[in-house]
Amino acid sequence: MVVHSFYVINRSGGLIFSYEHSIPKIELEKTFSYPLDFIFKRAQKGVVVEFGQRDGIKVGHTILSINGIPTRGNNIDFSAPSSINNDDDQQISSPTSHDIIEYLSDSANFPVTIKFGRPRLNGNEKLILASIFHSMYAIACQLSPELNSTGIRELETDQFKLYCFQSITGIKFVALTDIRQVNVDALLKRSYELYSDYALKNPFYSIDQPIWCPLFQETVKQAIDSLEKTGSPYT
Image (cartoon, rainbow, N blue to C red):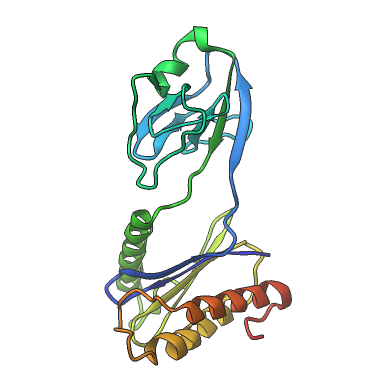
């Protein structure tokens, strides 16, 4: 049982705290012959699989490296084996770089070893998703046949669960967990207590602003560790 990540969203839908506790690393590397069974498309983070699934490689997976050389956006430079993606996910090209889709369309380059994976969300993507979830929560309240609906409290997929607790003041505490994790509601309420103790009681903190408090992050981490080990967020 695992808690993957934890977030705090303010009253206007802005992400004010993010903590990745145990994000699974998804990477698959295989050698392919020509032609490939996938259709690719160019995206901001690199070349992703648009159509075709096999051997654990799924739609949405990104090409991370070719023949052991990390990709750079939609390009790859075989003359620079130590190259990596820059922090801003910007496209980087050089006179010796190749467009990845064009490179994989040439039968002369095969066989080829490709590593697929799913890159982690960057800060901007987390902000966008927090805003979207805030809107979904409001829509769920409007769709309720009864007044004073609590909104979205739990979402379940075949891979994870999302739990949400909204305080009286409108601050949302969200956790993504393994589908077998129990007592997550207690973790979110405990996080609200920690938020009150370490953020709201801080004279230098302004409400709805990002939480830059090491003690808050540390105590949240302790609560998550305790939940995973004992089933209770209280140490």
